[in-house]
Image (cartoon, rainbow, N blue to C red):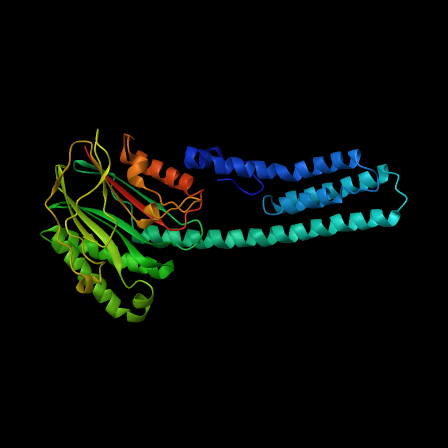
Amino acid sequence: MLRRGGPVDPEAEAAFGPGRRWILYARLVLRVLPFLALVLGLAYDSLTPRDVTAVPFFAAAPLIAAPLYTLRATVLIGLLSTGLTLYVRLTRDTDSPALMVTELLTVVFVSVLSCVMNTAVHRVDLRLASARQMAEVAMRAVMPQPQRRIGALRIASRYEAALREANIGGDLYAAHDTPHGVRVVLGDVRGKGMDAVAAVAVVVGAFREVAERADTIEQAAEHMEQAVVRERDRRAVELEQQEGFVTAVFAEFSRDGRSVTIVNHGHPPPLLLEPGAQPRLLDSGEPGGPLALAELVGSPHPGPPVPLRPGATVLFYTDGLTEARDEDGVFYDPVERLDGRVFGEPEDLLEFLSEDVALHSGGDIADDMALLAVRSV
């Protein structure tokens, strides 16, 4: 990514993809602004009477540099601004030494203030980066990446953290190979921060345990409901306030990858992408309430297995995808955005979605987004 005070990292730029690259270009333009302000100051000084000052341009340069450059670069731009101010006054043949001193002190004061601002911004950036890194490490520890190939299925996963916060939320996914087929869960724990990560660990751990033992995916979902209720009761205060329920969708793929059964606990339905067909929401039968609330809202009743053609992809996602908004408040519609597009691998699908959501929202992702794509080969 673009570092303050450093060039653009080509590998990071490539990882951003075409949908986000414009953000990097915009920041590059911003980095030119301090020097543009100095050039405009010189031009303004040469084109105006000598009693008109160009100090606002010279003072603006270090202020613009403060959030974009390193401390050393900000100091250098401040010194350059001060030097240009002195040069302009000396070449103007001014009759007011007091005015020259005032202008110099103004630029010096603004330059020092810019260095203080730069230091403060840098410390906040480091603090946020450290908090985000710790949360991501914790998330990787409780939610390992699924295998990329299980039997006749290819699997890809992706976790996009919200850009507005340093804390990771409670989005989760897991895939497990069992004698009954490949069983998958993707869900969203209510809440954020380390409490949500702890709740994710409970849900993922319970799924690993029941996925192997339950005879059907519906029974697995029922066991998960009981596990979440037990954890909620054990930590009643924290879970009722922060992670009192979990929306989740469970799926069981046949071992040959030709059918899938869905059990939905209050989660957005998965999306089915088939070659030569329009994307459509996958029939999940009668959905139920979120885990730990099914006793109040009702339990789900899965429909019959949905047949899958070779090359079909089932996309599971959290509401971070569908609730991403553009500048007009329009929600992201994956059915519309994926219509007519073909992806060679499930990883390509998730890469496109990550870039396209960033483009749709202007790079400001307000909520975490978990994606899991399962393709029948």
